[in-house]
Length: 267
Image (cartoon, rainbow, N blue to C red):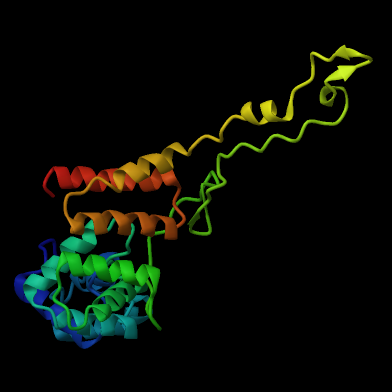
């Protein structure tokens, strides 16, 4: 049993072995795969070195615990390899800023997002503005086989958003019922003026206007807090993604405020 971490040579051997056998190495799933495959070797008392032979022997024993690359992963990886290192970095930074979007985390949904977004970008340079445009178009009108996945959100405690759409009736007070016919509807009773009488026109004046949803008003203000078209697109995408994910208006507003503060700090 050894206590030292894998050497650079062993890491290179593992990376090549993982590529050759389509083993996922990204995100938490990649960490789990590495632990399942390598820990039995590292903890071995006979041959604790990571080599192609020891990795192959370990894989035979733990194969049912390993998650392999799917067709979606391979498609996303193929598109990613067509980008330059600078473009790959631009994509990583951009996706990290999309708080609701499932990024490259080793999940099938994350790879599907990469495939859909990079597939939409074919022929266009990889910039933050083009990525914003791609996400916006994929949310509003996805093509055949294209889909965007978002992180699941806590179940709503209110009805401000229903099935991904803003519920404009939320917080509206019920309209007052028409005054019941009877003594209130009579100006004179037995020849005397009825002081309980309310003219129809006055009834309408006394109706209290339905309150405007405060969070919706805040969001409207936040969506105007931009100085460049790129910043506007990011705020709009965050709002649309929140609505599509079924988030409450309060949570959407919190996400928008976080983006605004990040921008003000120069991130």
